[in-house]
Length: 251
Image (cartoon, rainbow, N blue to C red; front, side, top):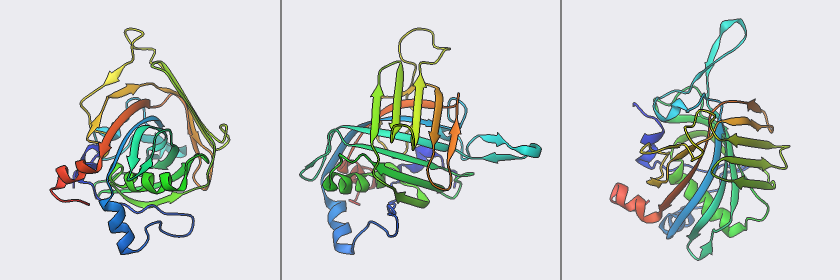
């Protein structure tokens, strides 16, 4: 299947993996969660190891990266720091919730399968908010993940303007992103790419392109760091009704 990020609109559900088990519950609870009314408007500070602008939005494999002895490997190792501007999951208010997703899309996704990701919540996020966000991440990132787990709670610092953005996980000890206004921009206005799909989000306000000075994830077995590579901000908007509209049935 010829599949890139824009074709993740198929809304294939995922399971969110915890440290030792799947956070999914029994069949009745999953059905109840999928039937819950929800909405989310959230902004991401995002960066990855691909050159600017990330070719994953146009192809079925990430950029190639050189190694010793002339070998090349394809990967897209990314960080996303999310802030919920407005939203709810049932009766739970999601406004202000902060969460971080880091991972790697792997070598390619012709078969719809990507590699790994780890989700971190800011300690201020309540248990009810976490359940809602974990459920919403399914249709937002509807790939077949080899591993998608929930990591430790860590403090998230999130700052952004139209010209620069800063995101820190555990004060930068665990992860960081520092994005800047592109030096090739024609004016001081944000440089925005529009009319390109973002994962499963049916609506967004465009990619505000900001190359990174640094983007790094420093935890676990697969730490990574890059500088001068892809970065952007994006605000997405979606709700449970979009799933019914897209498929004709509720998920």
